Image (spheres, rainbow, N blue to C red):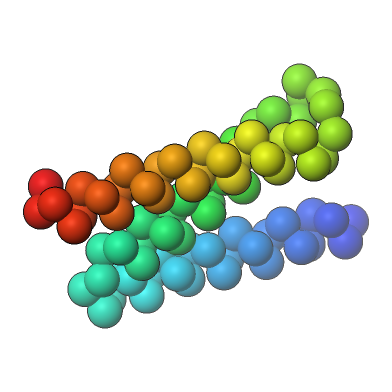
Length: 80
């Protein structure tokens, strides 16, 4: 296993842990943050066949994750 793959797996498990913590502690905003991070990681990896640098894919992926977090936390705070 390559070190890059191992690091990605560790990151995914940590993000899943954030989601789980948010669910068990009844804090939906924390779960949304974990989901946004996981979404960012997924998009970054989905864009791999498209090419581009890791930095470009990271900015796009985590940018979408940040947008997801902003909308989700806004909805939680608004009571939707």
